[in-house]
Length: 238
Image (tube, rainbow, N blue to C red; front, side, top):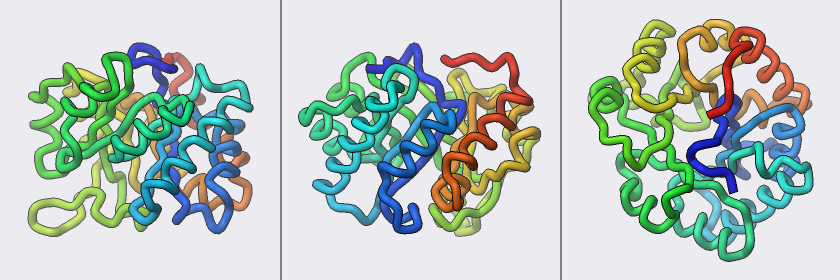
C-alpha cells in the first residue's frame, strides 16, 4: 500500500466506464500506467456500487500485474463504501478523493486509517481562502480547476452565480504558493498546456479525455508525462 508520505500525483488519470470510448477501464488504466502515469482515480456517476467495486479491484490487479503497485496510487472518487469493499476483496486501494459536499474527510480518515491518501476538491468560489485556511491534518492534496470548461465534469468550476470559472496560470501559481499541501490541477488540460502549467508550482496535472479518448491512450499518456517532466526536471515524488 502506498502511504500518504510517499504518493506521486504528477501524472493523474481520472477514469470511469462512461468515458473510455467503449474500451474497458482496465485497458485504459494499463495504457496510462505503461505510459508513465503515477495516479489513477476511479470515478463514475453512472456505475452501481457493485460495478465500481469490480472496476476498482480489476484496476488494482492491472497495476499489480504491471509491477507498479508501489509506484502508482489508486484512488476512488467519493465512494468510501467502494474503497472499503474493494479492500475487503483484496485490492490495493490507496485512498479516496472527495469534494467538500461529499462524505467528510474526518470520516474517511477514521475508516481508511492514518496512512491512506485523501484528496479534496474545494468549491470554486472559496478555493483560495479555503486552501490558505483549511485544517489539512487529514488531507494530503487539493484537487483544483478547471483550466477551462470540460464536458466530463460539467459542474467543475461551478461558481455560486451558476457560471463556470476557469483558472489562469497566474491564479494557479498563486494557489500552489498559498497551499500548505500539494495541488493537482485539471479540467480541460491538454498537452500544449503542460509547459506553462509545470512552471506554476503545482504538484501535477489530472486529465480524463486527453488519455481516455485518445486513439492510442498509451502514446498519449507518454506524451503528457514527457511534456510535464521536460519542464519540471527536478520535480520529485511526495
